[in-house]
Image (cartoon, rainbow, N blue to C red; front, side, top):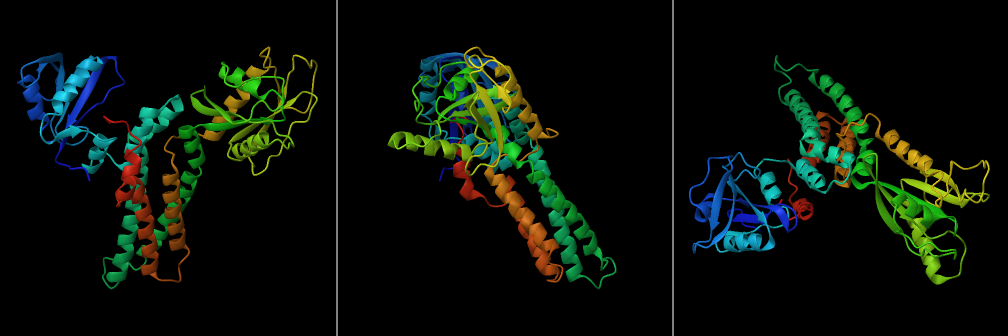
Amino acid sequence: MLAANETIYALSSGSLPAGVAVIRLSGDLSFFIAESLVGTLPPPRQAALKTIRTRNGLVVDRGLFLIFPRPASFTGEDCVEIHVHGGKAVVNALLGELSTFERCRLAEHGEFSRRALENGKMDLVEVEGLADLISAETEMQRRLALEHAAGGLSDLYNGWADRLTRARALIEAELDFADEDDVPGSVSDMVWIDMRRLQSELSDHLAGADLGEIIRDGLKVVIAGAPNAGKSSLMNALARREVAIVTDIAGTTRDVLHVDLNIEGYAVKLYDTAGLRETEEIVEREGIRRALRTVADADLVLSLAEIGEEAQRNFPDFAGRVLTVGTKSDIHPGVHDGYDVLISSTTGSGLADLHELLREDLPVRSGALSLALPSRLRHRTLLNESLRAVEAALDSEDRGLDIRAEYLRQAATSLGRITGRVDVEDLLDVIFSEFCIGK
């Protein structure tokens, strides 16, 4: 268990060397330590250029100091930011000096954000959004993460939880004070009208979970087909570099290869797989088994076949969309029906059309592009629990108001676990381990 009264520090900027390095401190001793390094501190939230010295009087560097008194800081504690030159020797000397102070230690992964959560500066969804924002690589990932980090999703869930709390209060008032004039006997009728609206809202929200996970984790596109259909050549052409080995020997690709693409701001994870055919060769059979497993987990399959051959349209355990791609159009000129698109990885013919088909598939999934979407399995699981509890309350008209109110309590608890309003201590170590040190 990490001591909450310890002051923590870490490099909070990028890898070294860099033009500027930012070192952050948070905790009760932050201002005392800063004064020991530079003397008089600047006014809150005003940068000042200071000479940084060790307690032995040796100059470490000159840099900018900013102080953020509690509670108006990222963590809710007294915080200091030190901006110095981003050389490894400078940063190591400063971190080494900080380590000499008692009750001051290097921060653990995500510990600054964890303190922000514990001090009420952020909730759990906002923390997860911040982690996603740091790791975002595409425009849509950035937008989704920013929506979460800025509290848009939390506001939605907190609003639903408040409605459930109010509904329970009205039901309990009717149970306890039904004989009082100011508590109408039919008050619960209004509650169930609102709970049916909430049921619909939860269902509609869960319908966007697939899109949220695709934006966050990437659209999984698998290239499949018979040996020598041109799968590896297409992989290299779309990646615009040599990712896969290409030969005329059937069965060259034995394992699943993967490359990340950015299409219209969406992350697309492209997988090249072993050629699908009957074989007795042990290694190739394992490659085919892995290929079929990868296809089963795909969002979209590109089924390749050399023009003149039939492209496979059905794959075991996969019920999603299959695009058939006729390959090697440079050696099979003319019009060929039966494929969604014709390409030549050698000449580049048809690749723009295939790219357009991939691009068009993404906005179709996004609907109105509202990014207040659940993006993690944890969100989906707890939202489903909440929805089932609301449905149970609505379907239990013959079981009494006390039982129905208990179902609503369960629904509110599940929503509270998403944002961290209800005890989620068992989740915190896992969530914060995803952060880099310094955040």
